[in-house]
Image 1 (cartoon, rainbow, N blue to C red):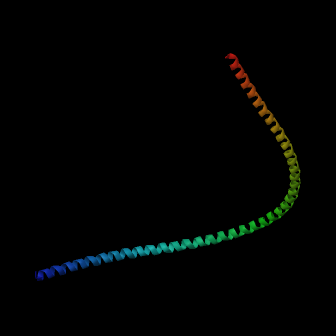
Image 2 (image 1 turned 90 degrees about the horizontal axis):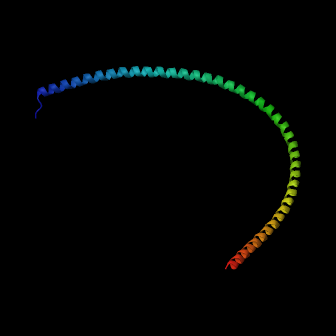
Image 3 (image 1 turned 45 degrees about the vertical axis):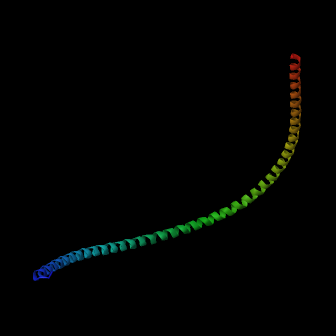
Length: 152
């Protein structure tokens, strides 16, 4: 199909309309982007100010924390002195406790001897009970066999 002059005219008209619409769209988007860019820059500037303020506050807080650490260091020195005194006292007490444990060990040794004696006595009692049970069973069986034999 051959292209006519009307077709060229329509094509040029469509191109012009599309070009105008495109320019209007680009101009509108350009304005929106510029406005958005301005808002972003203002937000960034505000964020920067907030960060500077935060840094200043943090610096003050760090100074306070440093002072607090100095106070804590002094307290630790006092506590160290107290601990040294307590350690000396505890060492004396441990020596006394060691002596007491030695006494307790001696008592336990005596108790062990007593338990060994009791254990020996219990073994004798168990042996006697075993003999008694054996003789009781023998006598019971003998009596039963005698009654059975007598009844027959």
